[in-house]
Image 1 (cartoon, rainbow, N blue to C red):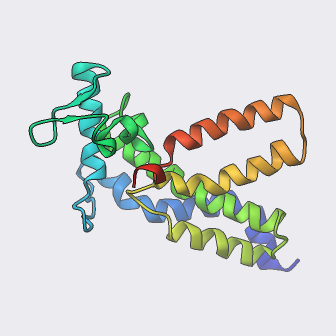
Image 2: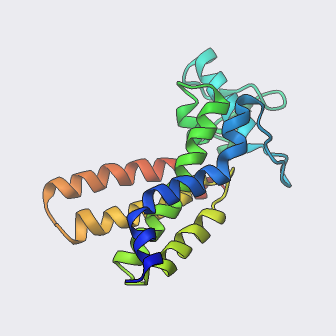
Length: 192
């Protein structure tokens, strides 16, 4: 192992925290005034999550969503339902929207890179620099607004390998089942 590989391996957690801060620096520094880039749908996902949380606090669990046009039935308009409470929307129940989004964004980018590195190094048996590059590349490709939860996929794959395949027992199956429920509740592929 050469000098660079040793430095990367000894400081991998710090390196991925720094790269995550690089990607989220603007959102963290500007706080509620941070710039949210509009894409082809004018960022409907973020305001929709705020509206669903506001609707939840004002009316409780209801089947009516008054924030769209003249209102919409939650069952007939599947894309408007409480599935908007995935990703940052879950934290928006207890934190302001801008803070919930920043926390979710930070952890999603960090988990994407760090656990891609761990999978590449430990399970794919790639070299340390190549594993680091794979993690850094996946961090760069993490979606920022839609389906942020997909960036947690390396985390779940890593722990699936650790809990279920390497050490198959009832406790680990239960832990993995709970993680799977969390992941399935946050992933938004079903709604897109």
